[in-house]
Length: 303
Image 1 (cartoon, rainbow, N blue to C red):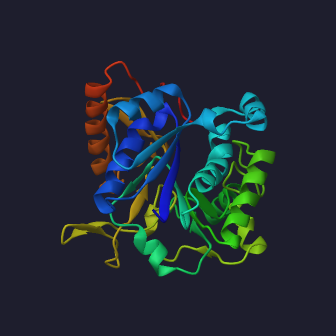
Image 2: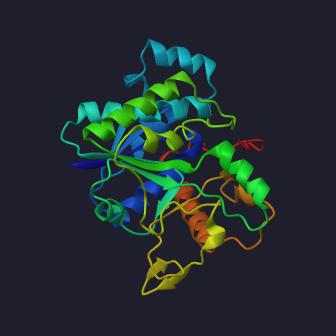
Image 3: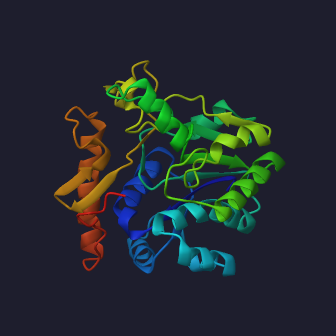
């Protein structure tokens, strides 16, 4: 094992995570995924589901006095963001054979093999995915303001090599997240994500991902068109859609799956319907294995 993926997971994203695991296995069968379980329900359900290549780690395994103190003062989102770089370091410390570790959000879904991302930029110690906002209904001033508040990058997918630049950058990111990780956009800071803007100025070999079809989501799908070609999902230039970031989904019931960032849109890309159908199947599978479990969002969960 020379490369691994990591995710941080709580019960409210468990259905999406199982969809993620299945999608990655379909395009990269042997990809190891280390999963930090933020609550007991998440750990128990995934244990029962017996996901191939998924290694479960309970959050208590890495919680020290500093983290436990932060856990008391930060909300759930803030704490999950805080432990992301801590968990990546934890995995690397336990697996010195790894040459690369990649963080993936639970609400990603893979349609093609992501190895192309790394093969196309083998000399980069850190790979970041741009979070440029392209929303046709927004004016330039509104987009510029949001970009300043949220940052230039999206932290749902980022990758570190285990060379000196990669590990130094990861350590710096961890230290910044421990210092401050607020769930409130601000100039130059937003959760774990705002810090990504500074990495290329502080460390060598920090690169923007240049591969097409990476980390498309509600903030930028307006620049793309999607179609099927020879059994593959492709973009307007014929390049494969590697993964879509289905940020903003709330699963209220098996029949009520909402996209809270797109409440007024009626023309979402058809990949959203594909994803919703998969989520419904996942809910059914989980219910059959763990009938007492409920990973549904509350009616007012719009965070």
